[in-house]
Amino acid sequence: MKQFRLLSIMVVCFLCTAISYAHDHNHKHPANEIGISYGASYCPEHKEWGSGCHIHYFHTLPSHEKWSLGGGLETVWSDGAHYNISAGVKYEIIEDLSLGVLPGVTFLKHEEDKTSSYKSQFAIHGELVYALLQLGAFHLGPAIDYSWTKHDAHFMFGVHFAYGFK
Image 1 (cartoon, rainbow, N blue to C red):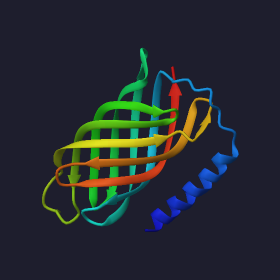
Image 2: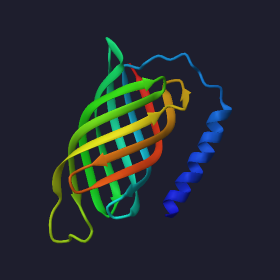
Image 3: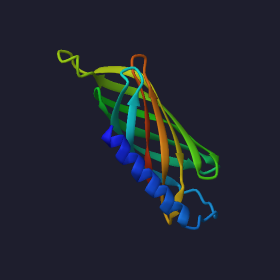
């Protein structure tokens, strides 16, 4: 719970700082983006908070600037370990707000299951990201992630930081 409080304070401070900057509305899509999201995760099945990190790479399709293809890696630390590898698409819903959907494979092991190894399962990972603050090739903003498997799911509320390049 302390992690969630600390993250909440950081997000509020970040939002106050970001709002004080003038937002540049001259929008141009980078050809490539590498990003990282870090935040507090919540597992409804176990009613437990933890932390999580998601790293992704996307390549914008030249003929359809709102669409990107890419992949990601994710890890969540809460009730045992959870790792995910995925590939999928990202769509810019409106300027600076994008939704990524990445099917993949999750490898998980719960703390109470000390005798078995990691189990792999099909997973869907979704992320909603808003690029609130843009400084040159970098953007920063809030992110909400959701990951689902047949036996496990979690939400992650955090901060997204990315770098766009040619």
